[in-house]
Length: 101
Image 1: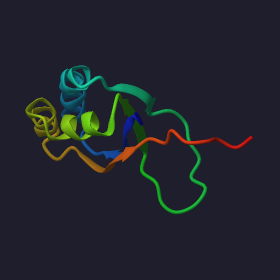
Image 2: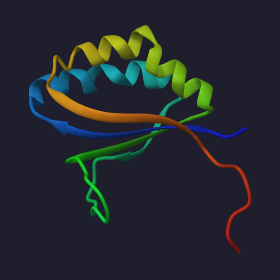
Image 3: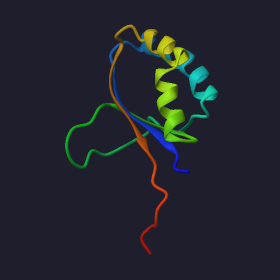
Image 4: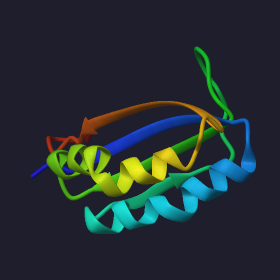
């Protein structure tokens, strides 16, 4: 079964609100088996636009990734941001097929 991923690009405008969100979002991630693959770190924009922070979270399945986003636990964590960040986010199914030789 293919894994599921959250891919988020974030600009933080209020660090205190964002810290409150970060302090609470782990409850939902743990419940749905999420683990950080990318959490900040240096990057280079090659094409298009970017935000200041990038995050990739891996889940056991696409369904678990979607369920986490809609869960009361994650929505409560998002409410802690209180507009302190702008975010673009998608949930995407991973790929289990053949790889280049």
